Length: 125
Image 1 (spheres, rainbow, N blue to C red):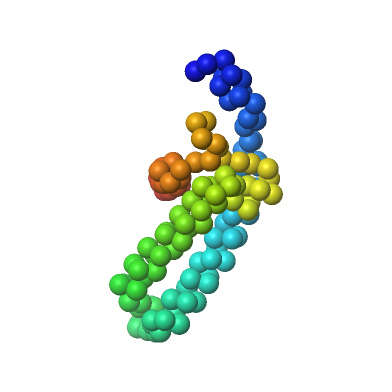
Image 2 (cartoon, rainbow, N blue to C red):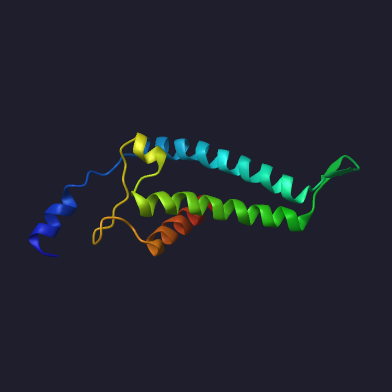
């Protein structure tokens, strides 16, 4: 790296853990609202009825898996849209955190996908 690039890279302050977690909580509320809307629309379109058999709720496994995939896709769409568009989700905007690529400024689709998958793998442990 040349001298100006190193200086430019050092001008970005790193966000602390508290600010990152606070932004994540803000975004979790937004994603939960999207999931509620998605579930409502899914229920209206497919009209799936659950059954109670022997005190256990029985649901359609195909519908459950389809809804789960839609939830993951909607979450990825939420984060990648904001990251690629402005570098900030609404929670990140409130806490003045921004995602930037060193080369281009805004991150591209591949970088957003890697960030999302890395977070998913990290959260599953």
